[in-house]
Figure (cartoon, rainbow, N blue to C red):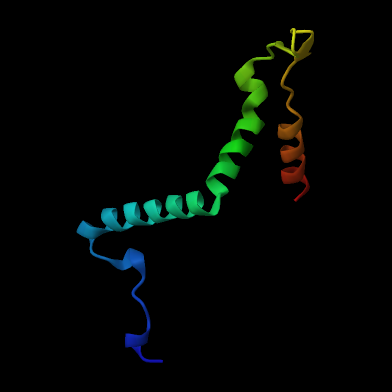
Length: 87
């Protein structure tokens, strides 16, 4: 293969253009995440992981007449941590 058949590496641009290239890569990455649905998945996962911390252990009324009580627990966080430890 000749040199002309290879694409130039994106980070090998001049110093005055590198910031623009990096921001372009970030924009394309977030566009990909958004279009593929992964951004919503990651946001939901983040919210679930930190829900117990964010709610502060509050008890929340539920049910038609408030006859039930709900609370957030850190089960998801514990499961994720266990998977990370095991791998």
